[in-house]
Length: 282
Image 1: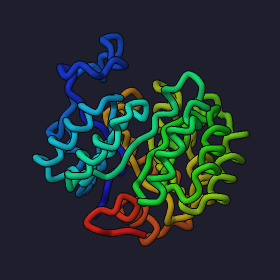
Image 2 (image 1 turned 180 degrees about the vertical axis):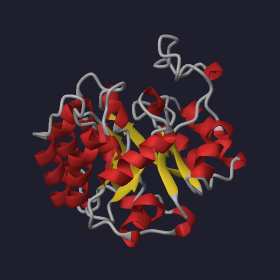
Image 3 (image 1 turned 30 degrees about the vertical axis):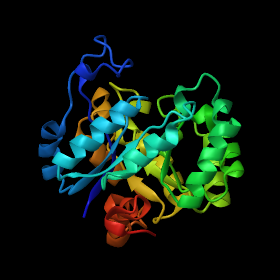
Image 4 (image 1 turned 90 degrees about the vertical axis):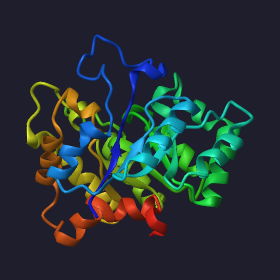
């Protein structure tokens, strides 16, 4: 089954999406499964991983309830407030849902990325490593030193880096991002990377398909065909491209060595294994 390993749904009336504002009209509206279904059908995507877009336990509950009613949602990556001593109870509640797939750590939203290295967060992540609970890491390229330190402090973390760790594609910046991602791939064989979120790191109005080739091929070379996943980042991608363009950008940028088997892993097999969908695990 082809899987989109990274997309979002939201309902503005819930009131916990403070980052969504009227000055970005393309995103300032509800986005629900019926809005995405035509694109999934057109590109033969049989399931998706819905990722949290608000830093509240309530939103994760909302997504899990939505998933129960939507066959195309294969899994939900939620959020935990590690500053709340009761977070284990929230996790237990999430895990009661068969569609719960993991947790996302929002390093991107931290004023200092080293906040992610606080003992209470590291201790929680070590527990997740023992349980092999999937963890998405959302960070920006300049935060990579903190991401690298976190992975050293939590050996064996079952982690995936979202959006290639957001390199500065619009500015054409390649280093030190490239060397840092290579080092992560080498030192942490249990870590994967999502080939997602690229168009919004490029020039929204003037990007060209070739803008992404070096970044995609570098990640493919470093992580290999078994540790990369396709993600649309829909509807955030609509700031710069529609669903079909996102798919086309990735397909065009892939190395020639990616044949049918490698593409099957990228577009589904790796996500199914990483998120343990239907009991699968690498």
